[in-house]
Image (cartoon, rainbow, N blue to C red; front, side, top):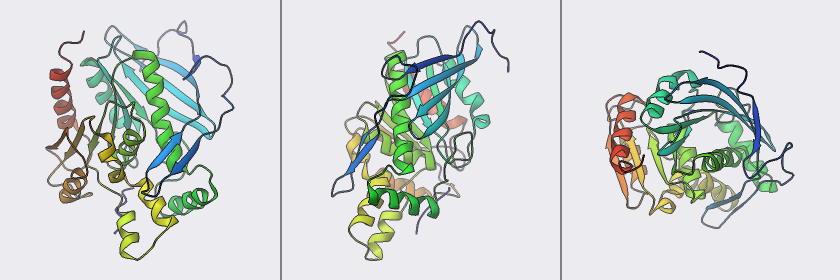
Amino acid sequence: MLNVRFCKFIPALLLIGCILVSGCASTPAPEKSSFSVDESGILSLSCAPVTVTEEPIFSNGTYTKSRIILHTENGDVVTYLAAPPEPKAVIVYAPGAGETLVGHEERMVRFASAGYAFLFVDTRGNGGETPGLPFGQQMIRQDYEKFSKGTMPQYYLSICDLVSSKELLDSRFHVPAYAMGSSNGGRYAAVAAGVDPGFAGYIGISTSDWGLYNAMIREGVSEDPVQFAASIEPGTYLKKISPRPVWIFHAEKDPVIPFDDGKQFFENAQEPRQFVVFSGDHGINPDVDQKIIGQWAQIYASRG
């Protein structure tokens, strides 16, 4: 079965900025993103550089918050960053289906106040500010058609968005960057961490495989459709993340993605890995925040 679920402004002296992730430029780079998928369904991506427009929103002595638009070859992607002056690590966060920035305002402040930058990436088609199709049958069908023609599927573009976000934060802070996501977002984040070894690790919350690959195998489907299905399954990439850490968080009473599915997903990971049960039901919550911050307090205790 396919499991799909699916303030105050600072003074105008802080100007809107425009930069290129891989260097300075006033217009988008002409390169095109490209992909390849091997026989095992492992995706390789070459993501074109993006230009960035940043609008400061808020600043105090503890953190700054800004709205950052990634101008990509296939449309604009909206992100929001909350960051202390010198973060110890950064999070590139992919939200679950229908999750908007509003539900993460306190979270961003919580992480920034603890010394960690938090970048909320509004996934294509997730119902926020970034256009696109939501994950579902229509998107899968259109993405497979693009895959068959060798053009970039939206799913792969969303992975490039996470990679480009990491590169932006790398150029700014030079600290470890983690791919993190909740529910559907945890699936995108797992693929991104597997595709790009530049991520320091992966954190998945209330997530699992999509189930598309296994469904096709049961139905006797083969060749290109199965290869494409494998390329978008997060479980395909968990082993590739090692020796970088994998943390999976799941609530026992999750009503959307069953606890056992989360455990089965976790079994794809290699050491170092950790499965953490948290209080709640489905999706990231303050208990997950505190568990992550508590672990990182030990890992990054020696940093400033």
